[in-house]
Length: 69
Image (cartoon, rainbow, N blue to C red; front, side, top):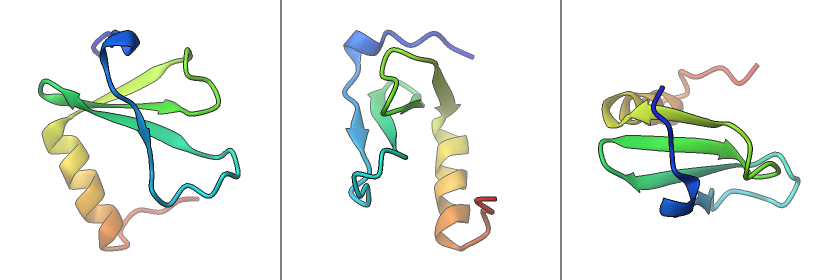
């Protein structure tokens, strides 16, 4: 997993975030990868994904093929 300089990226929450505190933030302005972090712990760990992997995940989620349990 690549190290992410969190000060150098722009984080955003989902437009579907409802303020319940169960949110993730995504940074997609990185070269060749996408980063995710817990919005409640902005200095905590960051998950990184290649653009190909992230795109495949989003496609599967939109088709209902991702289990959230």
